[in-house]
Length: 182
Image 1 (cartoon, rainbow, N blue to C red):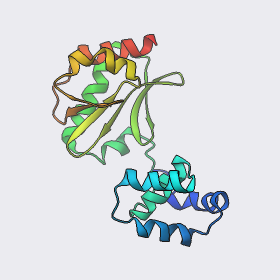
Image 2 (tube, helix red, strand yellow):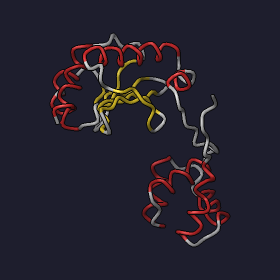
Image 3 (cartoon, helix red, strand yellow):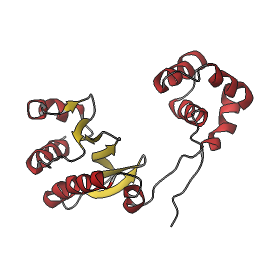
Image 4 (tube, rainbow, N blue to C red):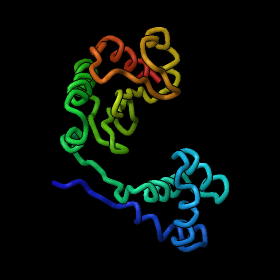
């Protein structure tokens, strides 16, 4: 089954209506900041023109050549798009967590695999070329476990682990336990 693809252009009618200018105007705005970084382009649209995050993202990504808002509907589809070594690590991360918490549901949300309990997200994973990001969906959990996370790059909402990380089951399970207790 192919992934559902709504496309970036699906937001264009709403952008024209909400911000009062045709898309040709917005494409010209983006052409002027073509070399700027993604956050700078987003900030321009939000700060100067009052764009919502969703509309700014659709326009910026379209201007950067991403015509698709590709949506994965299955883990298999997601796994096909990442490095096989990362697939192994991501699968081990989720296996370590679901081993202790089998009632967590593994879903695709925001084009990433996530574990959730009922309607609450508990833990997520995202990948880049150089590392894997794990996210316990809580800055408080990250702060609580900061002493155990010193070998890794800790961001505000994520932890960067190596692509070939030797999965620390106890750490993952403890973070999920803390997240579920919130």
